[in-house]
Image (tube, rainbow, N blue to C red; front, side, top):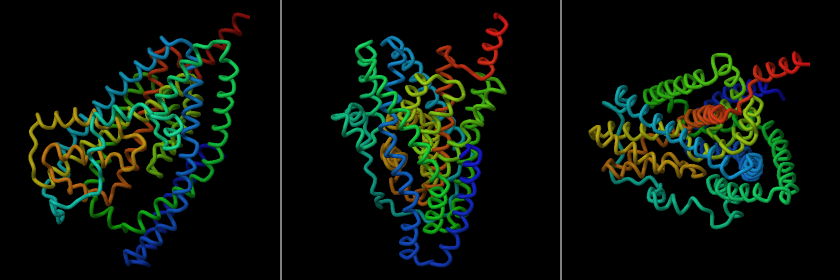
Length: 425
């Protein structure tokens, strides 16, 4: 199935999901009944996401190890990793700051005419698990097998870096094993192609299940917050595309966007960045990013470069503070920004991770944690936008590192090289 056809089918699945979800919500208005029906509908999308999770660990491990082995020496690994981390920190800071500025300008929680929840109400989220100490100790896996079984991407990356560096250091002695792992990567990419065939049906089920339980009215009730958050994401998309334009030029950024359009839509419609990872890997290589760069930088980006989630964290915390009429000085807001820079790096692989990070931040500034109940109902729709943004941000980050390394080979450059060789002959 071609990329453009799959993208079209995903869009069709989204629209059908909205229609079917709306019909189910008005046909079975009883909350218990609609929840039960939605559970059966969501079974399809749950299976798809489980299939994605099934391939993520071996795909990340095999492609990252092969990428490091191709980089060759430890100095190259450190250089590329250092450049990637520098980009990730800068992009995260800009996303957080942009969200902070926009939420202060738009004031989505100002004069909110919604019944606020009891300040003492609980949310069921464990905020303490995202402290700096917990993040650092969680960084290194106790067992490589356990990390892969739990799909802990950050831990898989750490193990794969050690494994890849050791494999590269073996030289000829490790060539046979490196060839085998490269074959594993090829197999996993083939499996990915099969799994992606189910994407349109999974998108339909995910949207239909959400609308069935929440009703179409949830989009109207929280319309202002949704619209203003997506305006903020639009500004962030424009900034990311602007950086891409500076790096690649008009034709280059247009070609890149055409290639990542499918994983972008897939992440948006499933509200899962993981669902888009395999397609991003192959499409970025098609753009001209070497496999050794893509397979090294992209998994790191899934832990350290979540631009959409960064913006959402500042947006949501300030929205809740505004809803409760709790003023925060610029000093407090900047402190919050730096706190989020640290705590958010443990997001990867944590269910409802953004909500957990926000919960941890609220308690630091004496903002009622129960304010999360204001946005939990629409988190699925917010997650769609931030997941798609994470795809765009990581794509541009990977291309930027490749260009920084002087290893980006666009189609025009390849044609120029072919023409130069032909002329020389």
